[in-house]
Length: 227
Image 1 (cartoon, rainbow, N blue to C red):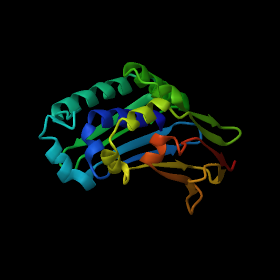
Image 2: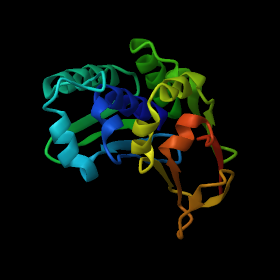
Image 3: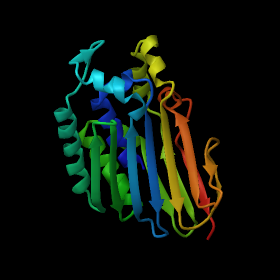
Image 4: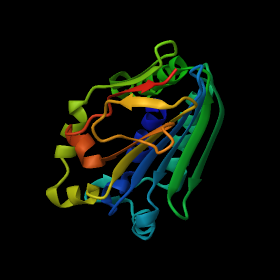
């Protein structure tokens, strides 16, 4: 969900060579219980460009962009993990940094939607980012509605605009994917690009990173569950 997404957006910013690789994927995998608790796993996958990333990691900078060392990436990740562990309602925190295939993962359990939103704000405040205020989740147990609120941040578009046209092409094969699973079946959902699984207990959304960065696509959605 949003809070873990912030974690990997920040990790991606540290792991700047993502901007220079041919493709990468961010996957957010959520399992929500009927009472609003659940688990989440987020993955940043650069394995399709692992050879190029490995080469970039040997450099100090490329086109004026500083390339962090493995030690710097580990340190930044551990700092964020400490925040996650100290957030009320968050437990069973696990993470892995695979520098062979260049895949980063983090997972945790949450007691409520409020716990996830609280963590989003905590990270946003710590890293002086507005991202924590641009996304939030709401779950109405009685009504059976699961809502994601999302407001596009113009600052993201401004940063993207600074990238040269030649470097922007590296985002062409980058995707954001979210899978939300429920115990109850899904009656309907409102996102144009999302799909309900064949067993009606999950919603799948896949968007191009360029559409999110430019504001052409939104993450806002409302999912209606059968009671």
